[in-house]
Length: 148
Image (cartoon, rainbow, N blue to C red; front, side):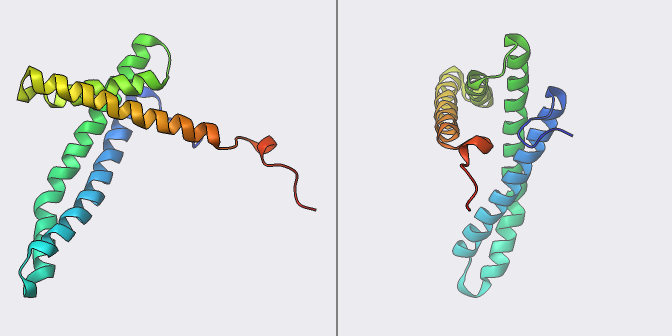
């Protein structure tokens, strides 16, 4: 079994990430649409309206998250295979390619805009992650001596 900080090897990573994204979309989308349905339902029918909105929309949101996660991991694995290294640039490019591909039905302008926005968002996420990892102590040497 891999260490908790290591990721699965590439063919399995795609399925793992798509499934994880689907679950995140199902939980988050379910909660979001439950609250939205409760707010939009008539006063005496809030619980029924919330349950209906959750049932009607959660699968769509979860599916969208799953597709995004699967495409992102596919592009990430392809870039790792082509570049022969795993670094933040792979994630940034994967986010750009995923966003652009999902927007291609809207035409070339929409795809290009989504490509740029997806890459920029992933660059921000990777930058925040690198900043946090630099601020966090690593290993037992950073812990200091035990209290006496």
